[in-house]
Image (tube, rainbow over all chains, first blue to last red; front, side, top):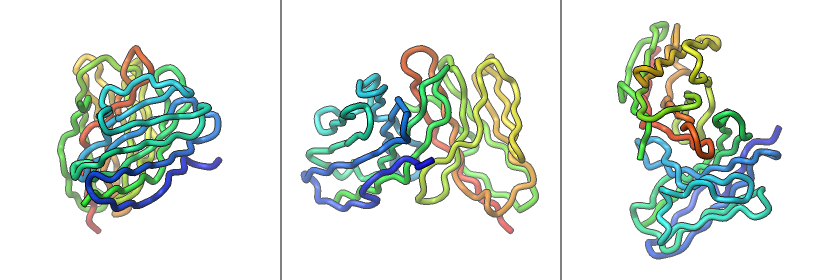
Length: 115
Length: 112
C-alpha cells in the first residue's frame, strides 16, 4: 500500500513570499489532515477535510493560509504572504473514517524555512 | 490549542530499562492514540486504545487509559537504543468529525 505523499520535502522562502505544499493521501482515505509542527512542539491541527469538504479549520490563520481538496483526493496548502513564524514542518495525514478517527498515516512532511 | 499534555517532557534511560510516559487530556474522547517520531521524520502510529478499554498491549508496549482521570500512560519495556524518539499522545475528540489532537510530546533518549 502506497503511503501519504508530500512535496516538496524542503522549501526556503523569503518573508512575504508565497508557498504551496501538496499532499496525496492513501487511496480510499476520506479524512485528510494538515498539521503544523514547530520545532520542539507537537503537531497542531490546521485543517481537516472529510472527502472534499472542510470539517474543521478553527486553527487555520485564514488571513494568510488556505487549503483545498479537489475531488476529495489530493490537497494543497498555501501560505500567502509568509511570515518568519511560519517556519515549521507541515505534515499531511490521512485516515479512514470510523468510530472516532482510526490510525492516521503521515507523510514525511515539508520543512519550510522563512528567512 | 493542545488537548493533551505529556509528562515528562524529556526522559533519559539506559538500554534494558523501562520507559513510562504519561498523557493528560481535557475533553471527552472516542479513543487515544500514541505515535512515535524519529528526528526529522513523519509520525508513525504505535497503538490505539478506545474509551471503553482500560489496557492494551502490543509487543513491548503497554498502554493504559483512565477516563475518570482523563489520563493515559505508555510503557515501553526493555528499551533499546532504537527506541530513541519523540512520543506523542493524540486524542480523538468525541462528537464532530473525528478531530485528532496531539500533545506536546515526550523526548525519549535510550543510551547503550
